[in-house]
Image 1 (cartoon, rainbow, N blue to C red):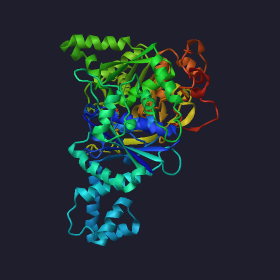
Image 2: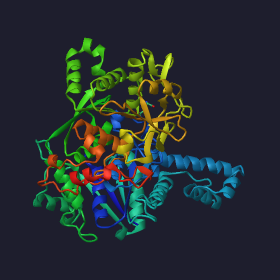
Image 3: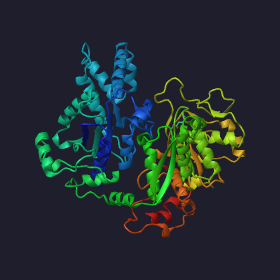
Image 4: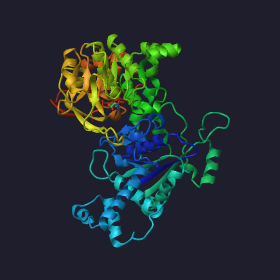
Length: 591
Ligand code: GLN
């Protein structure tokens, strides 16, 4: 196993994650298998309880791990599926030690024999074994060596987990150390990684330090000129040839292309697909306007995967994505009274959009505004996609407007509502927030096959998508809602949990209880997003019928192989070998 460590200096937010992912892309393009680990030195156990406002979105993995958004970059760039252990935090390291301490106590009480008989996870066994040999008795537990050892063992163990669907470990593990060098929290990790580099040997470990080279008195950075490289080389003891300049580019898909310069690790990296995608992204000009009606508007990191999924779908439809941020609460009547200009602005953005997206969320701020946005989309035939909370509010809106249930609400916002159409799920916890939601990959079965979603997903029996929620559509209200015209086309394996809703007579009105954004990939757009974008730019019918519209497609300078099939990794169990619409001629032509 070769290790590449990426650290950051001067300031955070330089794009260390994108740099690390791009290094992975270049290595992968050289034919190597790549995995990655993100270290977040904060004390939290995971990102699950952290505010998207401060830290950006919480990315959800197949195994239900709630992790830093950088893992999303790795999954998208490398097309891999990571595990929760690929994100190391100080909290997790201490948890292992705490567990070990607890087990030590049990050993002392002779209960440890139980574990000796039934087995323990390797890293915990390690501590117990050491204790049995007497290594710890009477000793102080210290950062060095106890924490630094636990970190190194974790890295070595997790690096071996295959993440690309193939057997056996990857060839290279890219490790990104969050924060910047000098942070107090990072110190044990830096010490552990120093020891680790020594342990695995110089041929197996490489350090990449990402730093800002500012231009004084100007906002921006410099493409490094020779004398700057020379100076950096002298001061940092790094050969000039190893200093790479990653200045701002038009889109992030150009970063792997910048990194390719001067390197030939295992031959020339095959990055044609990345070149095409980067070119296409820059040449699109016809816009598709999507109104994002959310709580954290303007903070793109809070909805990073949703934006990426929109972008992947827009590129597939050859449209330039324009996102109009609509603060949900600005659509509400109270804003009309208190800040009429904000109200006007929000409504004019909403009304000017080709499509409307209401993303996931928690808490009641802006909920009424989201309900109004769903109502507007439903009544005016505007393409609409509601994700998680977005689906729940679409149900509330439908119940209020169509079933005349004025008190319809979610018990999340009104615990005593007389008309609970969204309710708390029995398996959740109301007292413990961390890791207690319905999390990770679950199956959704299509109960109605003649619907837009089933077709968009390629007529499969079920899809595997990632979840993160505590509330669900009240199963006792389904019959009434369905009778009034709301179609629940996708359900879980029990048939009692609603996963996908549609309004059959609307051009595109879809709600999903899961988060399809987490599995969207460049070149493999997620089906519900593709539906939204295609409907928003008048291409949905053609897409669903599989007809080509070559007259609309740019041909010059737009390589046709840049956009491949939509996300096949999330679909399963094809009912018949019937050609998926997504793989149809439409796609091979739009490229
Ligand atoms: N707050 C809602 C729930 O817990 C929706 C969650 C979400 O949008 N991720 O069910």
